[in-house]
Length: 228
Image (cartoon, rainbow, N blue to C red):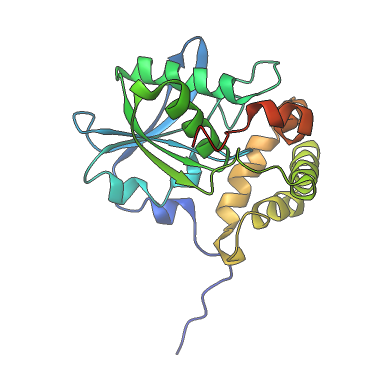
């Protein structure tokens, strides 16, 4: 008798099956910061930075394989996930200063930095303005070098809607916006993000996060061709 696998039966826990990892919080320059890490702290550090509106679970499929070679640390960036959310408009320099504080707390002068979307934007900013802290750079669909009004408006609308009304369907739509293969959006991932977006006051935080989708704020933060 054949068995039919339920739709979206993958999960973060399935990704972490058999993986030794640790979730904890650090004080990074006064910001309570959530970290998920795997691997040996005596090995070279890879610091992973998620995308806008995201969280450390973006790297759930990386903790196992990377632990064989690195101290692999993914954080919830400033204003994101379960990390502190100061009442500021979140610009790239603010995220970068937080990452520098994370490195200091981790006891490292430099790291290999892997950044996705907003995380790639922040990683690039660090490579340009603080090159001594960046040993190697991996950019995954990095933001900060284009400004397409329609895409910016769509991202802003979906994100603010999901944060102001963190229903299952809105969170699902926000995640599927990111994925070519929409089957990668598991029920587990939807619920993880729904719980984050349901935090008191997160709707206002998301509006601050989305400031980089405003052209007059985005342009001064962008990475220029000369900087690349």
